Length: 607
Image (tube, rainbow, N blue to C red; front, side, top):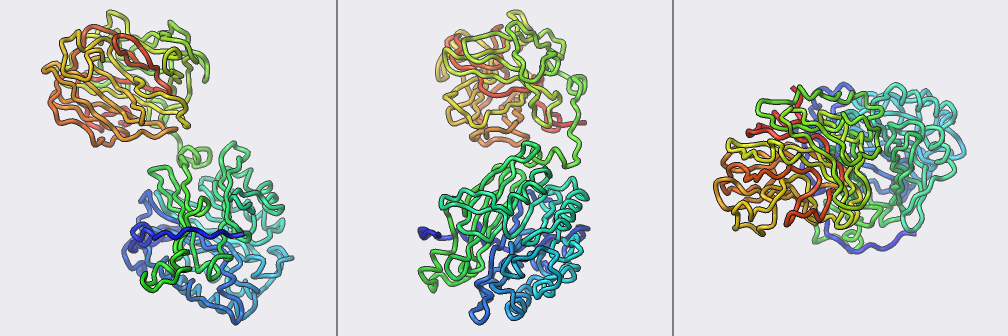
């Protein structure tokens, strides 16, 4: 059922990183002396968990060859950021004394040197029994006493066949449950008790059988897997990932638990591949900062060989790059774990807490008195909480879906509310918010500098053509202000827009010159809240996204904003004094300050 994959050279810099130390265990003290390249940084947002599937063909009576696994274990000991390794069962082919003894001796390369879990597959024990089977050659070798010295080891079920580990990585603790080939009622009760005692920890379930896959890599729960799903996984929201071997080909799927959240179900098994899988590991590289788990599959044994001496099959099997072997999972970890993490989200902050000296306008959308998803009618007024008379009024600029109130918000925003804009190109332009014809903001020139802040979120998927949609702007024509050097005299004197590639664009015509210094960001992500800050110190402009300075900030001099008494607008940008494209996404709090603010004073910061 396997398929031949094209040869591909492994990017060794991505896989064979030098060691930096390992996880220090449930008390999270200093790294042990054997961490030969320094301390594992438990707060680094980037770390890996290694998954080792069925090794049974490497421990098959007189056909055994543990060398591939020894190479894998050397690789794990020398790795810089792999926090833990979990074996998915079927350590051996027959579970005989000889096979178990050889496997046990091989695993001693990790004992006291690298944290790991292991569990029994049906080839390691009598496959017709549950975890109440009593003693076995497997249990004599891989019993709780073996792991007692491991600082990640949390405990085992009374029968000894189920265990759990607590690791610390990425700035938080993670629970790994290693469950037997078949759980008894007592086994299910024990697993639930572990979850109950660690209610705030995101959990990974490892077991030998849970799901199987078709030849396209789509996974389905097996009959026994359905029991685990119904009795354990679906009702425990903290379980976000399950891993099993047993079947091949590998595959994956996403199921929805009782809380309405995703649970990733993955099959990892390469025993059908060359050399019984060659000690191949599946690397789950967590990036908490990016909200991504990057998954790759490779053989450290083949990787360690001289490239000039690798055989064709070895070269082909160094790394597997099919869609079920190399992929990425996008997970907003904070949002996914919010329901159980025990972290209390920040409460809304009153307007008075963020009205700094020189605040000239501040708008938020939690005072509209509307339910989440309710339509915000034309004529609705959003008050300027800086009390400078810069109130906004909702206006339709074309057909299309209505403006909606939303409870969605950036976790660091003072107000826990936003507006959902559904604009598009003409005629479905949607709605805007604009100041009145006589608002003071219309004519402020910001000679001493300014900071413009906004929270935005782009939908995922980002459907339709929304190129050059406006986020914030002043209305009017730059040509009417005597500006001729820009791209067009029909564009406004100041606007924040989004290009077709989702690059943020800030273009401004300063007061002291006929020029249009323009800043450009990277491509903005979808489905994630961002804080944008445009900071001008009366000499030049710098844009920050989520507190990080973007690359394409011009050094060209820029003092103030050429304003012409035209309304300030949220949700669109004019061209030739006409709106052609409405904003598509969410906008939260917006604040304008008549001076350059340091990052410590941005709206995301609590004092």
